[in-house]
Length: 84
Image 1: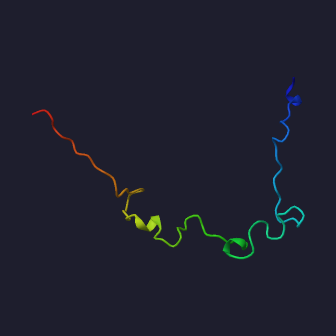
Image 2 (image 1 turned 45 degrees about the vertical axis):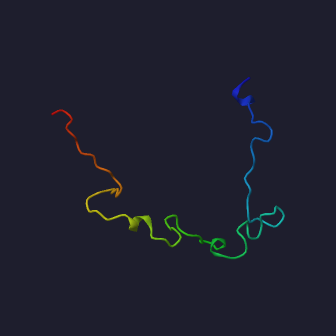
Image 3 (image 1 turned 45 degrees about the horizontal axis):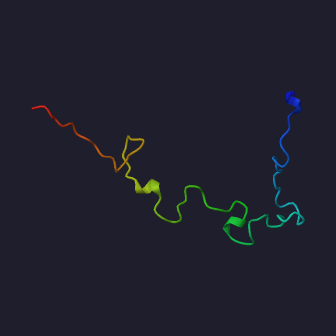
């Protein structure tokens, strides 16, 4: 058996579904986006950083100048002398 004799098993490779290319395939016209609404429009939808109108994480955390990351829940440990 050579490398050019190998081929994928039957049904292992599925062709991608091209949406919005006519009514016959079942994904034409609205292409699975529904009829109306923000997500059906071109360029619609919300950005990845949008948190549903709640106060964003970037604004929740305190701004500390000079630090790349500030963890408000950080616990600092102090050394304890156990000798003496």
